[in-house]
Length: 107
Length: 119
Picture 1 (cartoon, rainbow over the protein chains, first blue to last red):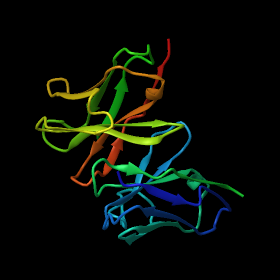
Picture 2 (tube, rainbow over the protein chains, first blue to last red):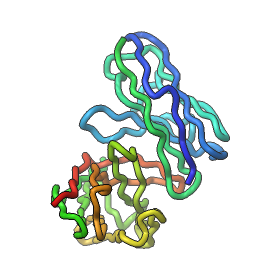
Picture 3 (cartoon, helix red, strand yellow):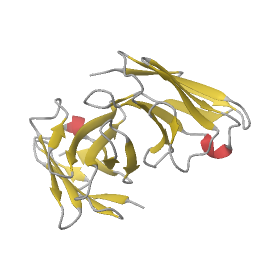
């Protein structure tokens, strides 16, 4: 199985900040990389698919980049509702696998 | 707008079978997409378990293949999961998901249901 490693595992930021989360795959996954947001007690929500494509209804302050093994999720102008845990997930090879998550909390 | 809702026992005894249903509304499962199950546990994080295409063909995670069965009931618009011979390691939140493509894009999730394996 492809291993997905996220960094950092947690970070603190303030409303209005810009943050970047990194995800690295154990082998190339071309652009088959998705990002999810999960809030406590809720199911994950798809934010970005295909490394950089914004899911319908997701604010444009969320953006994704990368290809091959290295990917980033950037959130610009952090809003109070953005404080959550973020996960990457690869869809290049079966079975799909997820990163361990990055918890974003308020500084 | 598609909605998914899981149902089933919250407590299962070790060595028994875990059975969960996923009721889908707002979309007919017989017309397209893959439908699957993903679980989340504190120790293992997210684990993709299995998926079934609208035609009925299935994919099972090799780590679970000997214990898992996935099926569709198009008359009820329902996806069902059976996991045999459960142990405490199967304790998790189980999510029903829609995969809208061939590259595992999980665009819709149920609310999740907690299943605890304990005697």
